[in-house]
Image 1 (cartoon, one colour):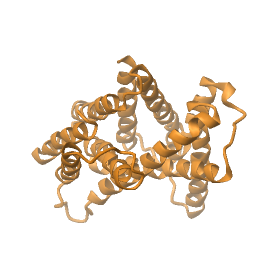
Image 2: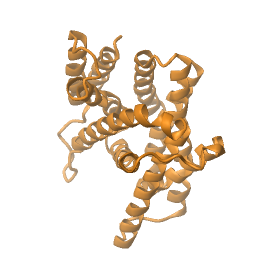
Image 3: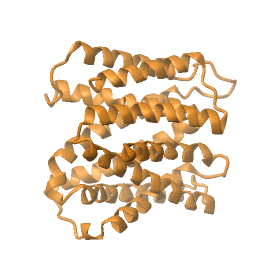
Image 4: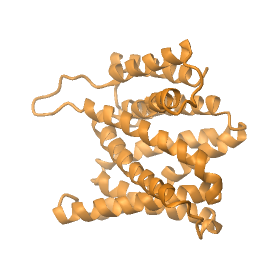
Length: 289
């Protein structure tokens, strides 16, 4: 239980980081793009023996690098959405993206088991939750609606989680374990981040300052440990993903909402509270509870 609690706390710390960036004049893009070297170094100091790597075939190595770039894209979307839409809606969009790997496993990979009534109901409720938790389409003059960010977070996390699950199940043992697998993915993330940093720097669209650079440290540490402790929790529960992931997803949503309310005075509308409630039920059904 301790590992699960730590994973939830570190996951919420990621969203708190995003929410606090505006207050400290942090360019979220810089902090996100520089957090991956912090993650990599944290993993290395945790297990120096992970290097040298045992690289898989050329195609699998390409997928690992592509997955790493996918982390960059989803993280950027999550950061932007948290600032525009708030912590709780972004967290919900992230968590109910489970419907995408569920659909792919059920109808394409054929590894998701039988499509039961409860699973189908969970899918319906999850999509309904996205609608109810989305911010109102009415906005102040001159401010564009950002519902599209929630949809982008939902799709990006769903697709990357699907690919990550597939690669983890097929490559982790071959490359030498969980931490080497994570570090290989982070190499792809660092390469992708470097390209984005160079491109945006040349275009002059990044606001370089010390706050943005230093913000990568408090972002990278919880980014690594949130996933690390989730894996430890799975080990402690004999890899019972249905129970662990359900408790994890629900806890992140609820703790995010509570944190936003207490520390950032972020109010949720009745419509969004309904969305949170529906999302929690949908996640529970998708995980078999």
